[in-house]
Length: 579
Image 1: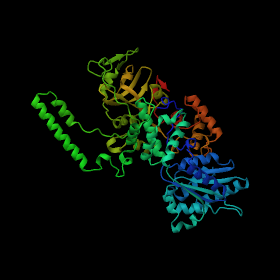
Image 2 (image 1 turned 30 degrees about the horizontal axis):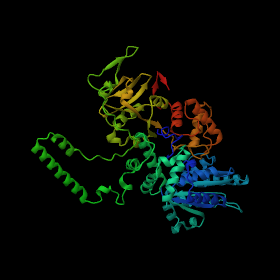
Image 3 (image 1 turned 60 degrees about the vertical axis):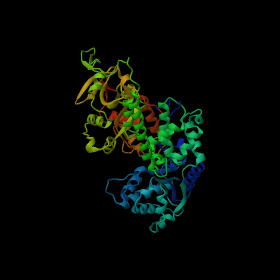
Image 4 (image 1 turned 90 degrees about the horizontal axis):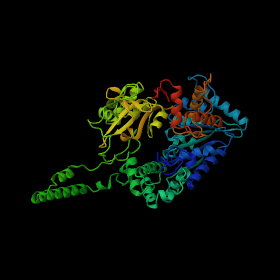
């Protein structure tokens, strides 16, 4: 989005737990050392806790990159499971075969114990990592404790690492969990970054993303403001900085000043980060709004009196100013995840102004009548994206009513779909190959949302009102600024981009569906490790479909794979065929 403007190779402030962006502060080094030390011990528990967004998962990902080759890892991302579900998940992660869904807890434990003994006989170690462990129930915690009883005469067979929020430490202080607490061999609590660490953290991420002079992009005053806003929480730093760089891009400046940063914080976080009371400074003193309002009223009365006395002609403008509401702080919510630049002032020489005098239709070479964009804009009925999502869901064969179903993206999530909003070109839309909502702007900045199901180099089929109309795209640049939204079918195990070497359930989904795409007669889910062989298969697929062949499995790669093998996914028809 803004990467090329700042001469970056990738987005520097993604909140995905990418270990390559981990800023190794002193406490992050210590946290990583505790994980490495804990795994080197003979069994037991290792606890890594920290506030939300302090980087626990990222530290763990970094740890996984350093784990010895003779170690097998089971990574449980969703701990809200029953005992049987947890044991089945461990078996899946370690590729331990079991038959049926109704086997007993003892059967699962016997399978796991047999696997651990075989691995031990071959000189291999096994580690179980559970993220968000504060959500574990007492029954599941007790079962996990019992798993540490699997041992030989010399050592425990299973090492367990628990990642969680501070309340996980409190759970281990409960009397009924004292046996569990006594088996903890290493504990570490990850705090927020200190004031002097925020600048190096920001500069580190920018440098990894390819920035030449990151200090010039975020001056000292901006870094100081950033600490006060974020309180040193890395995830909040990432969210605010990402939106701030987008704001700087919209203003065509490569310096993120305090004003841009403050606006970004308001969009992402609201006023809670600005004052201890959680309110805007304007409202901290209850008498201040009333005093200002009273003073403004008195001033207006004086001006109106003077206008009457001296025959001035400014009464209308004074009344208009008095009636104008205070500008509201706009917060961005899905799927509109980017802030649009302000609409350009109307050009009196422009041929794109929507008016009754604008051409209503043109004919293509085949004689089929097509609407001009001016006419299409006039006929478009959706003034909010929520309304347009009704048409987009209809393209998927799904009925959606905003009043009944609530937020479009939350509704989509419940159906196994996900919203994606992007800035791009018509080429980007064709590449994704899915029906899209595009946002159009009129001459006065008014907005309309339309859905596109078909597109070629000149024409598109747009949902206008209750019908689909053929529309000429020649004036598109006068109405469209590149924003589009779509729905895509998200794999159940997708939690963010998967990098080579990652251990995640998504690798199983990926291996199976690549087998289907490659016409393998016996598709197999494989292991949970995104290993070298699977990475090479992904790179080959990425090259064939026009994605960057970096081996990183993100939204683009998953969309390209899903729509090629799943007939239930509607495709964007391009030049008479699928893209």
